[in-house]
Length: 287
Image (cartoon, rainbow, N blue to C red; front, side, top):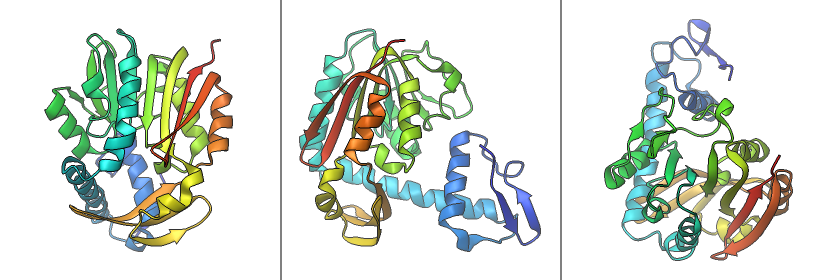
């Protein structure tokens, strides 16, 4: 991805040679930072890394609030409805399968239900969540700049597709689980295409997202809505452990998701879960 040219007090410069992060994910975060915080520019080139770090630390502070809320037992909606359905899926997977868990978070939904001899790679963009998972489940966290060793039985990795795994290593997973991830990304088609590239032909995917048909109910979870259009809602949540500010939910129409997945699938099944979750389960076409 070409880095955005940004304006500093000293003039125009490319980000790449100066930003002290080499992982593609951090570059993605930088692009998001530039788009979300235009008021920070132009600034001194000596100050913008500090500004970026402040912004990124705010994201992780939000993740910490969410983690604390999750482990306080207050996140009952997912615990009572969604996680049992994910557990059922994971328990149905045969031994020896290689599972990719996109947006694994703290690992609670999938890792406890893995069978012996199942290979597992959990991806997430929150270090707070990954550090919790690696400590609780004793699964190693692979460094950002390392190429994952796919012979290793289980591992966690900071990042997201497609950058965390080179696409020339596509078709290496038997199962892909992506729970409550698509609402974080506006680019639906690219995300689904990348997910399917990671699967072996005949491999299974299990994708959970907010049900776009329950937009009214989901918007009702926001304590305060700052912005709303046909595709997204931006607002604040008040949780027992603190407030999550400027949360964005991207709504991808169920029919569009279904049609997009149908392009890559021999079989696809839809299932509503817990009144607001939509599950898309299918099998990748064989060549």
